[in-house]
Image 1 (cartoon, rainbow, N blue to C red):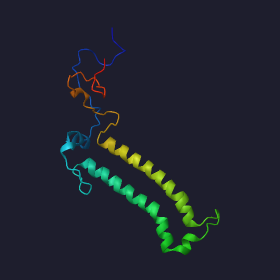
Image 2: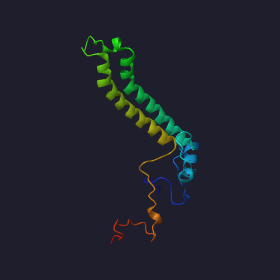
Image 3: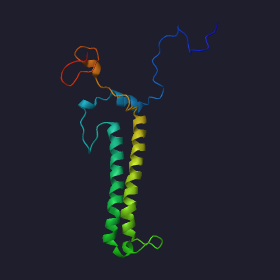
Image 4: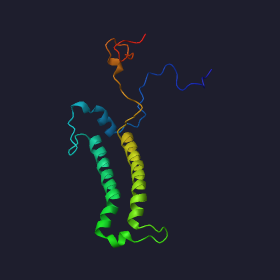
Length: 153
């Protein structure tokens, strides 16, 4: 009788699945020894570091424009920035600083989270899969050790 409840049968050889989505960038990321790589903010040594630093610098420049732009424009062109907005009755510089900067920061944080998720997907980084190195403990059991030095049990 045919088994319709399971996929495959017991005669199949064990096959390790990687999901078929591991890209070359993800494979290179897995093979990188980050503990022995130089960390330099101006010259990143790995593709992941370069991509992440590009996102960070882009976000920093956008943030600087959002925060300091209205203040700088008020110093450069005070007449245009201090005129009242007809519908709201507030000066333009007040509106941009009071609402533009916080809203811009919120949108920037959403943008960063989406970019970071895209990088994690590109380099096959799963934040829920953290290697704690617990299996390398002294007794080889993988059990957690209490902070007072005593083991559980």
